[in-house]
Image 1: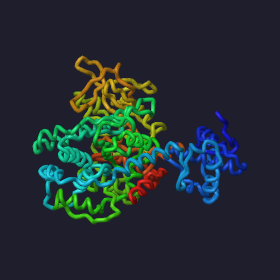
Image 2: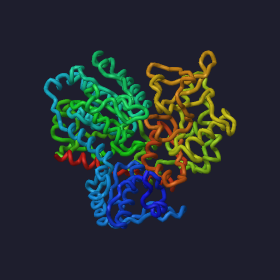
Image 3: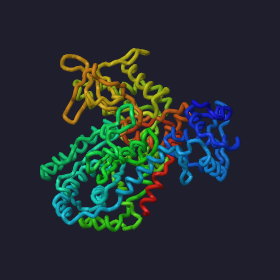
Image 4: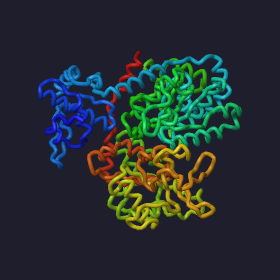
Length: 620
């Protein structure tokens, strides 16, 4: 492999990896030394930004900025020049450097060709699907008898955002259903499934999918439960026409564990008429590109999620970019007319020819209220003072955290660490003391500790070890092993055992006193022999990323002090919001007020051109 081009410069940089230097060195430019060095540093910045989750480098953000500086390690970093010099350097290099066809410079954004292609494929596929397809009179006739059952009229007749989202998705082939916890996303999706099948005489092949096995299972359970509530009022053949067989996106596309090639693609598309993807905020740019490539041309795509949650681990923030701050307080004239045909009693919305009907945000939480709602709203809006108004700052740990008042409280990290052993016993002793595996699984849902990182004193690995030692299930310093009441999380997919990354279960003896791993499924409990169990880890504590799609009665949310600048980048508003909204009743934050304020003011901002591409499509 070619050596790093400017080692004297590269060794003065903090937070970079060797791959950044090797990447930048591949694109040699036949020009003067000063320009070559600047071009090298721009490419280092591109590689670094892609590793941080950006799909491109917005060159202007480098202007007059010193990056990769660290006083502790005495790294001087690099001061980038003014904007005109940067832009001229990139344009000059793009016309002269080796392998310039592997890069793309467009509207001030520098890409590797791979991510440029991903974003353009996504925008092309979705912009073709946002055009309105007018329902025919026969469609309205079929919908008329079931619409009042799906959306019963209320006396107050407040605005029904779930009904609007369902109606919008019936007249276009791309829709986003966005909403926070408790806003009725499953309620809306279930009614959309029924409406689509009714409108099309039960003929549609509708596929449900989610990014993880846990999210797919939860989708199945939620939709099945919602269908059960409507079963007595709707025709049996309509209920049975709705699939509750959600799968992971990777399994749907046929992506192997170690590869990137898919079994389904443009030449071998998926066999479906509608694809609905839940937890869409977890879908990264590369995966979304593969999804749209595999969609048949006629198929509709519906993305469901919460754009304020953490974005995908890999590059991109697709859901946020597609929404792009669009509000659905206004509708197009065709959608307004469509809504009147379905339900003339709905309060009218303002009409605008700028309305993006494909973005539908559910605004009213049906179950998330009180201080939890106040704090979540403040965090989401970046208003730390508003969020703090709903938080009780405790001078000492409660006598029993499991008996503490509902709502949101805050305790300093030093008090938490001194009382960790007592709190661990309060939160988790009930699991092993349960009288049955069913009771133990229920006890697991009463409390979960969440943190931003895997490593460090307050990372997942150390927390789980400390909790096990407090509970007396392992000796200090011993290697963790299976024991009665051990909560476990699967860390890799195993299709043979129907276990998927993120599935959570418990180690518990069977009737013959043999330890097995037990998992809740749609059809009941399932026991798996420990010899057939895929790789698992203890899960009293888990990362916020892994908690997405889960809910617990109580959450203890730890804002771990960053041990490096990369760890500091994890403590963001989105991470805090995601962790808090896993709680159904109460959340205790382990943080200082200054740390909390800093996190609320820190956003995940990923450079991307996808929002711009979709805006251009919307104006055509």
